[in-house]
Image 1 (tube, rainbow, N blue to C red):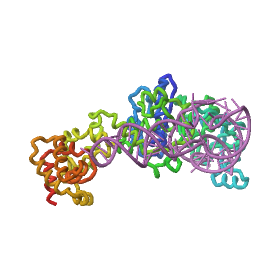
Image 2: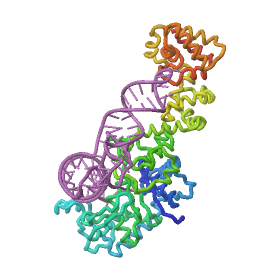
Image 3: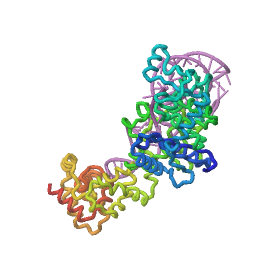
Image 4: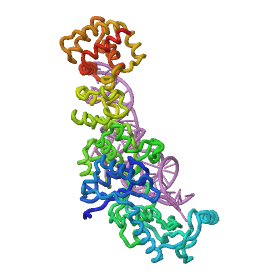
Length: 468
RNA sequence: GCCCCCAUCGUCUAGUGGCCUAGGACACCACCCUUUCAAGGUGGCGGCACGGGUUCGAAUCCCGUUGGGGGUGCCA
């Protein structure tokens, strides 16, 4: 075990890696790295957790993607909550023996009835002094003392809670298994966690945890509750409504660096006037004290803009490499054997300056690898019925068939010359050729595309279109 | 119901009592560039929730109101 501060990251078992979790992980990681501490990954599994191995691997893969790697010495884990089952029970037993906890045999229904009768909400401490011992069906409850608790939070400062508003909460269920709250605290103790950095939703439960630390004779960790990530309705991000799985952004061609950078600007901003900054600077500058107090909207549009910037920062080679998974995916629009890596590489620079995500790349250049690109009928009608369009198409086809040089520049000059004869401006003359060759009115720069496509194929497509 | 947190352009933020006539980014709009679409450049639109204090002076400090969110289980 290393000697520095120990930060724990403990995602709850939702089955996927949440963007909110990713941000919290990044906060913990930045701090652990800068302070020479440790990032402890703990899987909050339960007996019922399904697909534990698969889910754990998913978390580890997603963490690796955003730069938090297992092979880094600052990374520790994963640990599993269930490994500490004995410690959970031992802690409960100690609390009971010290009188800090007591057994209660009331059922949920009975508690509700009593609450209704007395007009008070929740459990009223009925069994506090009944001297009950453990037995099946009885829960162990924590005896919340009189007074108040102040949680010292690095993000928010001191937060006061009056004990009269905290009911005697359950530590052990009627079947003897520990509640999450207890397990969580005991795990943190066992792992010598010094800093708990997590989402704001946990703040109201923190006084309970702090009380547990104290009752167990230990100094509580440093707390830091970071603001929630919300949707456009200002509600906590949920899987049902929102696109929150990190894996999904990964699959859609977002660059990890862009995701990381964007996530870090939610609730915090790098010093200086630049918000696109490398991780090395984030790691150096990030401080919990500077984190905002209010929830932040996860704006996919801004993420996408960041992603575009990061794509443009790539070298052409790196861009081509990053595109590979998307060019060879199963759902690619062209037959796999028609793909030509050299042609793609030739077109890469013009694609790179246009794309905001990698997933949109195949759709931009698909016409190059398709045997017969689907023709947008509407666009075709409109384009070819324009004055002079038909003549330009026919004459350009002939000119291209006999062109001595085949280069973007010559192709451009040739077409413009033909267009001029028919009184068409450059852009106008280009339209029929573009639709005839690519099937669409929009796309990457025409002449570069024609150049890459080659004379034979271009002339074939033009001739076919001209005969329509 | 009770408890807790929060409040600067539509969004993310800078701002820690005078440098604020409130700065930047995304989005949006216009123009330029241009070979369609982008990218890039220039400009524009747009905000301190409200009401009281404190102070010579408040986006900044205090109180209240309103609004939003979260928590409150023998869920994790």
